[in-house]
Image 1 (cartoon, helix red, strand yellow):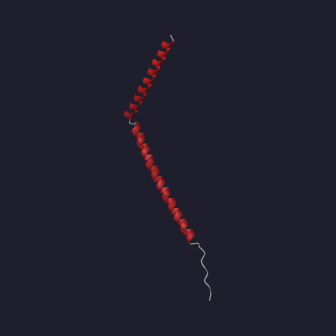
Image 2 (cartoon, one colour):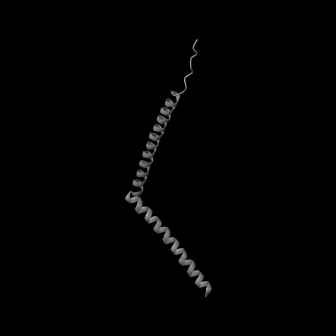
Image 3 (cartoon, helix red, strand yellow):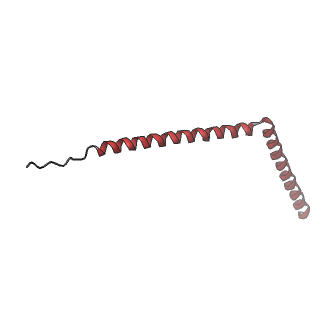
Length: 85
């Protein structure tokens, strides 16, 4: 009796696993047909491109700021006095 019950449970588990695999495949197929994944991939690529552009601009501005600060500190060095004869 216990073996019949165990066999039934094993069969139910196998059926559930097969159903889950089929459902997953159907969902993937439906998502592919709607083009949703392509739109998401395009949006992600566009966001990466925009983020790279923003990072490049920030890097450029930081470099310009560093150069301006270097100019400002270089000109304020103390000037050596000339000796009067």
